Image (spheres, helix red, strand yellow):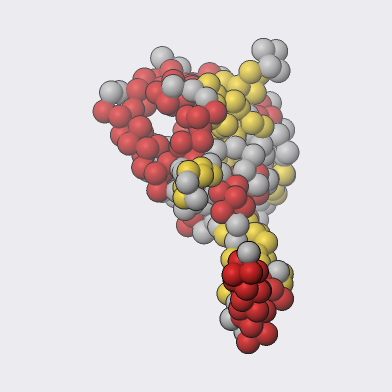
Length: 313
């Protein structure tokens, strides 16, 4: 009994010695050191003996992953694992960019090339798909806020988007081209012919169409139209003269309205590619999506979707 008490006191004295001599520091172990940025997300940290630490749980949440604990061993899994475990993949899309994505108010469902592709992706994952409405101005922030796992719908691959997110492999090559009225196809044969004081151009805000117009149109009048779906009809009805957009969208509308003509699609103003947008920092999820896209190309599924949604075959 006496020996036991002596051992307890020795343990207490040793503990106090560590505290006073600097071997342990409760002050530094509980001192907040501010925030740590991870792929655009702000994570809170704690300073322990002069070094900042972030909780594994918060790290997992920021990466859209799952945290598993087994016998004091923590594992942060891929977003892919979380999708499979929950049985659903969340797909962000704008719903305003035919032929890639369109929200049909009559059926309350999304339709289009990339919508069907996303449904096929979910099927191959063995999960359900949940479409999440977003917009072009808020697309990146919504992705970073983990509102969805992947964004689809005619997203152009560019270095600006790659700064804050991860773009997948491309599934389509295209470029900016003018959608005009068929009666004007001999009139608007170049960008110079379009950029004239008497011409009115319709453009949607927040995307690559507006960036191209802002950078290249100096004389023509530019009208910003919030709903991208309205602009082709405005061209057909003479409310605007030109819509500069991706060549695939121009061909889509021209194939469905004889009043319209997709000009310069063989010699587009720019060269670009379509891809899907995912959070960066998760190579497991990225590799799966890219391999799935390779399989879609090999099996002819992307060509089938082009014939159905772009060429109206």
